[in-house]
Length: 68
Image 1 (cartoon, helix red, strand yellow):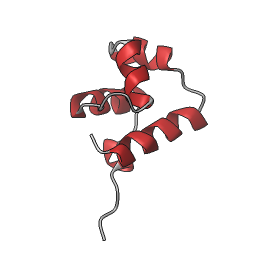
Image 2: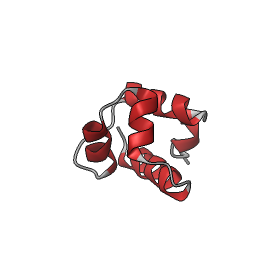
Image 3: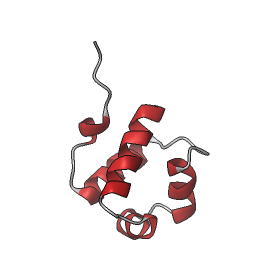
């Protein structure tokens, strides 16, 4: 997954005070996977992004970089 997308998603979550634990419970993605993904130690998979966005009730396209 693109680091820009991961950083944007991480900022969105931090700004709203959403915890990794809450995302893990809501998506069934392990907290270890989420922690490593949000800390840049692991690439977030597309299906995980979709699941997280579903939990957050937002469109995944929100985090896609705008191409010029």
